[in-house]
Image (tube, rainbow, N blue to C red; front, side):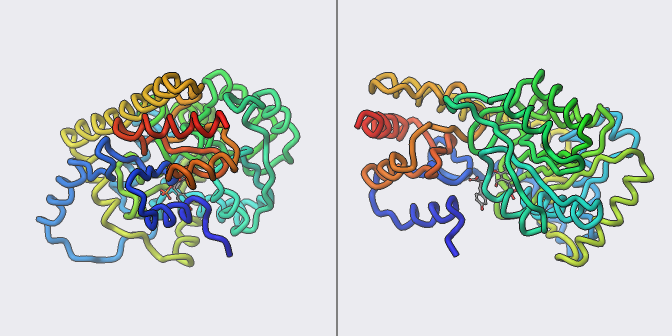
Amino acid sequence: MPDDPILGLNELFKTDERPEKVNLGVGCYLTEAGNLPLLDVVEEAETRLSEKKLPHGYMPMSGIPKFCEAVKHLVFGEASPAVVEGRITTIQTLGGTGALQLGAAFAHQYLGVAKAVVSDPTWGNHIAIFKGDGLTVSKYPYLNAAKDGVDFEAMIAALNEVEEGSLVLFHACCHNPTGVDLSHEEWRKVLEVVKARDLLPLLDMAYQGFGDGLEEDAFAMRLFAESGIRFMAATSCSKNFALYGERVGALHVVCGDKREAEVATSILKALVRAEYSNPPAHGANVVAEVLGDPELKKRWFKDVVEMHDRICEMRRALAEAGEAEGADLSFATKQKGMFSFTGLTPEEMDRLREEFAVYGVRNGRICVAGLNHRNVGYVAKAMATVLKA
Ligand code: PLP
Ligand code: TYF
């Protein structure tokens, strides 16, 4: 079996001995110093938790209630009618990946959904997860021919052809791998098609805060929730809390009413019970501690703004350094979130890696959050060289 192409690349990077190497492969936010951050607020929450000297008991099957409530509010907003009416059930999951898997299992086993459609391109794991849960997977067009925007007409035409009742995966913000998102107007049109075709949306939001901000990035979630339709959402604390290895995420099922949400909760618990019984405690306790304390929460909001701003600065720096090298890297400032589609071919990406030790995914994706002021000029030069040849 081949490795996951992204995680496999990460392993290859570790064994590369060239000192100039740059890792723009895996989607992890790195600091200006090139390290994975340990957020101050996470450190403080961990200190508080360790001082409590809590025993390591089992968690509830649906996760830690304080975590679930806090994340639900972060995603949908405290005042959301769907939240106030109790129409949303939120279950703690093994990262965003676990949320996608649980959502797919719920749709297939309990709602009788047989087909899923995903954007072309999408994060490779979407396809693997959905197939693993027994769904057949097809694609709807997303990127335009110039690879710098959405081919919205083609996307809508394809969604209009999707079999009624199918699961449709959307990236709520910071599309992976393209960095190209829908406008508010486009989201409203998508919602109309979803309603007309009775589709079951699954909104994946792994990068809340890294696109336009924590509130702004939740636009699609909140639009869908306010519309009254039933849908699912998979969210993750891996990136915006830098808690990658702790596996902290949530599945939200937005139902027609409170009673339906209670039924959904009991079904999800049954699925969890048979899969892993109950989720891990540490990461969710950390998030609950941060979001449950107004002072820590405020500091965390600032941390997210700081990570967001650094990504935007690196986008500008890459485009400028490209200009200085005579290469058009302006895609960087047109796209959002952690990733950019460079438009480079797989062979050009191979050259970047082999000749310059610049690691990006073969589909042309780079993780902009791996750039810093020390390596951005080098990366631009490498790209310019490859593009000129
Ligand atoms: N969805 C997308 C689009 C992602 O890029 C990721 C990345 O890891 C995930 C979901 C899953 O995140 P997690 O690490 O929380 O499982
Ligand atoms: O796309 C990425 O780089 C992140 C990290 O199997 C990731 O989403 C990549 C592959 C994978 C799990 C996580």
